[in-house]
Amino acid sequence: MYPRWLWPSFALPGVLWLIILFVVPFYAVIGVAFGTIDPILLSAVPIWNPVEWNVGWVSEVLSRLEPGGDFWTVFVRTCEYVFASLGLSILIGYPVAYYIARHASRTKSLLLILLIMPFWISYLMRMFAWVNLLAPDGYVNRFLQFAHVIDQPYGFLDGKSSTVIFALVYGYIPYLILPLYASLDRIDKSQLEAARDLGASPLQAFLRVTLPLSKTGILGGCVLIALPMFGDYYTPNLVSGAPTTSMLGNQIDLYFHSTSQPTIGAALTILLSIFLVVLMGYYMITVARATRDLESV
Image (cartoon, rainbow, N blue to C red; front, side, top):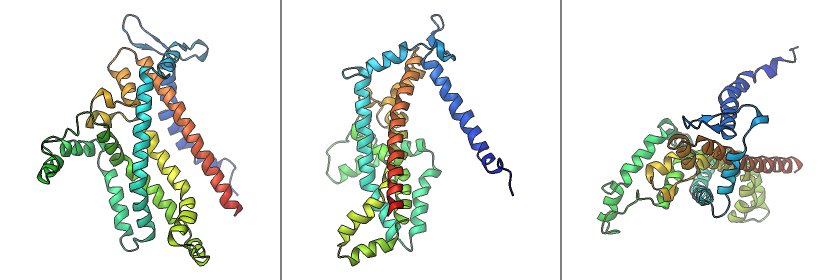
């Protein structure tokens, strides 16, 4: 009844959007990464023809990403911050998502609205609010001094790794809770009842039924917040600003805007993208396996 091209044509706007706003700009970054530097103007000269690409800048970045190189230290620090933030986000977000999905029958809509509300406010504005709260004369230091926990203001904003991790958790945790909630809410309660009928305790039912069935939600939420965390540069700048807490995103921003070597920043962007593609590939393979396992049951 319908021409064969009708339904595929529905995807055309999205495909054009991706080509114009992702593929073309990303190829521009590749052209800069494999390009040269103008010796007079000290600006990047992209090379668009793959046959003429200059691999020198990428090779330099790879050498600096080896153990002992300056980029290696930043890469390790970035991984530490991201994985620590992921762990804290799961510890905080999973109970919240579980409560909303299983026990918040009357207040579920209200709690979901409260989770979505941070998206209505600019990320930078929310970070600036925490900068004011964590300042030496901010409310956090005032409360800690009032409670006699500390004698003098603590330097939360003086290049502390814990402050950067806390800010990452605060900024991205809503993106983890929502997929977790969706995954937990789809679990059929009859499976939990069957586990209880077979003699499983509430803890055993959670560990053997709920947790495995919510694995895809956990992985999806982790991927959703880990990918932007690896490229984040404004959070460390706002809550720390110290070189000792800089992440890979800060290095990319530095080479693009504060130095005459944008090719280094572009090459670092390409290598970071490859690393993130590997993580995304692991997530897709895991989800595919979990889907096949569920279909075979």
